[in-house]
Picture 1 (cartoon, rainbow, N blue to C red):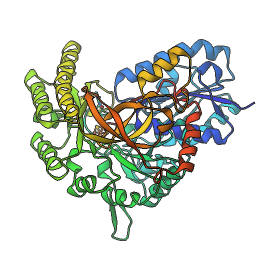
Picture 2: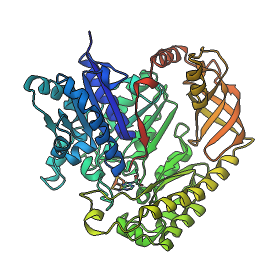
Picture 3: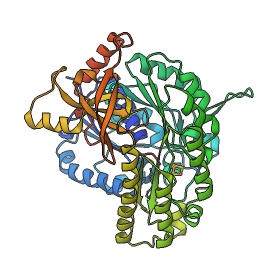
Picture 4: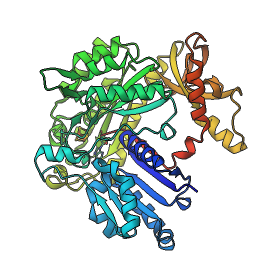
Length: 505
Ligand code: 5AD
Ligand code: SF4
């Protein structure tokens, strides 16, 4: 009998990718995936520390598992990722039934650590060095990148995959834990990225999303005077046959250079979308956040995207209720949303994080009630913009990469207890080339193909339409589709229990 592992993932796309890699490595050791923690010999939580709420949820889940672990001392319980790197021994103090604590930069070692827990009967910790603990070179070396072990069943869909091009962050925004939990910014060599993208395409992947905390700061120094920028990298990746779409997240406003904007405009495979968080529309707040740009600089960058790549959609993140945020400074964020025409914004209430500059220097002086109201008010302003953007597509055709049955269709099939037949008429969903969620009538067998959809209706979050034509059979590579369909026939959704995906910091 194979051993079973259960994994629950909280946090950003980086964490989803890390979980895929950990499961890929454990499958190589003969593990299979369990659907419930109770059915597994190894129970893992891949964690997020960006906001307190995400951590509290993990500690509650650990509390609920205490009895189970006491009854099954042979089982291994592990905390992986950002919380492991941030809280370290504290995790063992708060939850002594945890056996394994492994930071973001040491995940390669998970299989070996599980074995060490079994053979020694003692908890195992694997952590990277703190940012101030050693020289930059040594700290960098302690964050190991181990991306090539890919596992298709852990992906959002069999046709879409994340690909890390950069680890860590050097920006040190005052509210953010990421520079310590994910370490120094390091760009991966373009040859490694190209080989991995090729491997993903060979596995039937049609869309890759390049990941980096400040992805547009990507720069690889070849050591012989040559440098590869993100736009160069994407131009090279565009050659890979089988890949139809390339996206990249998350961008930093000051590093938004014209070569990248022009690449988004000109490269047919590049999704016309930028996720470029503003965080606040008020200069005093931006200074306190140490975002190193002004509102005027952000506006100038937004205007440049509008002029050079008018088709591209842009989304943002905002933090409301940051230390010292007055009603007047908050209104400046509302005004920024009103003039910037973001397709959507992810809005967060400020959550003080121990170890950050803001935690040490500024009082968390905006009451929770005010944070909540500002969050709602900003969302209302954003939704007005989102609705206008989506409605502008009514009557137009968009190209959609079909992901699978829509949420409504999935709920209906679950309620009826019936799986879909490949040719049954069912509501399907996917993303347009501008990254807009699009819902239309189709059939499950279209998953993984590109279709043209004429938009008839729109809400603030979704386009609704009908297929005009699907991919011509000449372009459709039947063997790749069959491979991808085979992958989708596996119970993909149920293999990602508890996955909550948020944007990256
Ligand atoms: N509190 C609230 N939101 C935060 N973010 C990062 N750190 C914090 C924090 N301490 C938000 C930022 C970032 C997104 C991923 O999370 O908006 O872009
Ligand atoms: Fe880096 Fe983004 Fe965090 Fe700023 S908010 S420190 S850019 S990860």
